[in-house]
Amino acid sequence: MTAIALLSVAPVIEGSMSGEVAKAVAALDDFDVSYETNPMGTVIEADDAETLFAAAAAAHDAVDGDRVSTVLKIDDKRTEDTTAARKVEAVEEHLGREAKRER
Image (cartoon, rainbow, N blue to C red; front, top):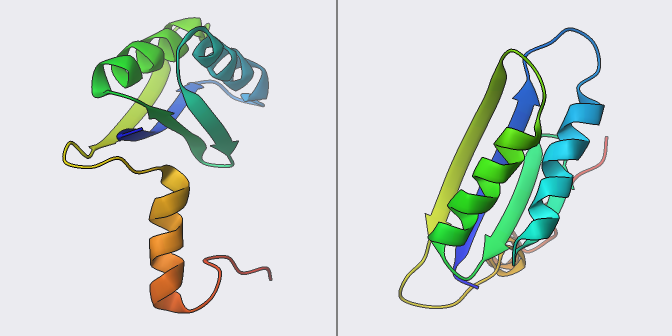
């Protein structure tokens, strides 16, 4: 996989957004992507940027509401294959530890 994205889709509403966010995440299942949701968004991996754009558009469209906020950041590494996990591992190699800390 060479294209990795951070996607955040949310309705602009008061109260919990989790139900609508779940709809956005579920929409990703219709695409040839892998993903992991975290508290600030969803990391998506695909073979190409076009697939990421299509998946992000579907996630955006899946959210109901008068106003929807979507942020998409893509790393389209075209010279070699990589994964989101490998990007984290590279940082951890420099740190000499896991890139995680519990309070």
